[in-house]
Image (tube, rainbow over all chains, first blue to last red; front, side, top):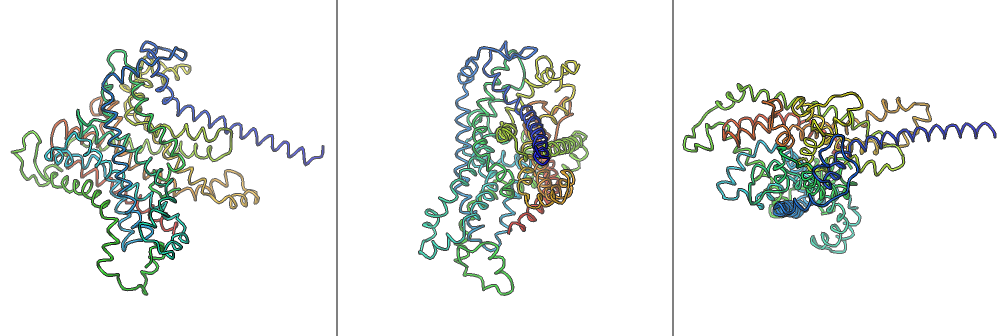
Length: 283
Length: 312
């Protein structure tokens, strides 16, 4: 064995040791961060007596009792309200944001930059600073505790993100393709339907998922503006604030059902998550 | 101007040799697509704030709507002189600063780890971002009852090998409990941004530095960090803006207590509005929050503008 191979071997040995250390550290961190989520999921399948033990119970016979109890406890209306508010607002957001993003990117209006920055600054408006007028106006207009009202608020909340995100996808459409369409005499709607939409479809789906995540998880507006008819899933969870009696397994089952749709959406949209969270600024 | 022109080209054309403005009708037809979105945002976020400004100068209680009167700066004087409000300001500043600092440090460390190649990297990444996806209200209650519980909480169980006695986290260390939970929730958000920054590095430059004999720490300090700075700043600014608005865990875990120990500004406003019905004072506090947010947001917008310039 000549010296060069042995050095190479030593080096690769050191490298694999290093990468093993990195893997170990990263996996440890991942398990620490994921543990509360895992625990929530696992506890939902326990009997109450197994949920509250010291030390924690790891081995048990899983049961669906808690999920059945939650579904039997009028969970469904909350679920339906959440679905309506998130899906409704997401659809509206896309319908409104796509033309707006178009007017701010591919066919920019004069002053498009100001409009773009105006959108983003509205996203920074603290909800606490506008909740009072929204409450009073909704009360006077008779739309307090109303899913449509909640959807509209979520639409306004997510529009800036959607406009910025969709704009960033539109800018990735190659100019040459659009020019070719122009030469072929394609009108605006043909251009939109035949060329732009197919090309940015994954981007639109990602934007929709991000908007869905924010709307589904929203709590402040929901708890302030709804009570019985339009209350969403996070409002249902407020029933678990105080800890009377044995309820941890039931809470975990409810929390699992509440969190599941968005965890799934987030995992699917993972690749685009950072773009959504930074409004298209980071890709 | 054709529809295919890029904004950059449009900008360039607005120079000295720019053509005359298109006719009014055409300008409006081009603005048309923008207007519905603009309208929704203005009506639902900007006009309500104008109303908040108006209410902040009124002496008004939702329970006694007939006794409304003009208050001048009375509400501001009252709010600023209120020890509970000042406490809420301090709590907000402390909570935001502690969470942002701890999260960004952890986020940078985790992003550096995830930037390496190792077995199961994608799974690790997926697991690490999950805390940010869990519905904050659900997460808050799980932390409160399953993690922080003094008798059978997993935190005490995890600490028991280190000789830590049973601690009632939420009652004894309410602020620490909130910070811990929020760091768990916000680290993934910041990590994703920092990781995107790391992955946008030019590998050739890194390779050249390595060939020139630079060690990993020199490379990080001299090349990676300066380039990463913008991403770190963005993570800190966006994180700050959203963490100032923290409401869910305070409502669900501590109810602002014990006493006023964990009442931050959003929770203070919520209580003044929906528990005391003091419209004027709540509005004045809301205006103060907006002023504070604008202070942070100005820096954020400046950063956006600079990233924007480079993108063109």
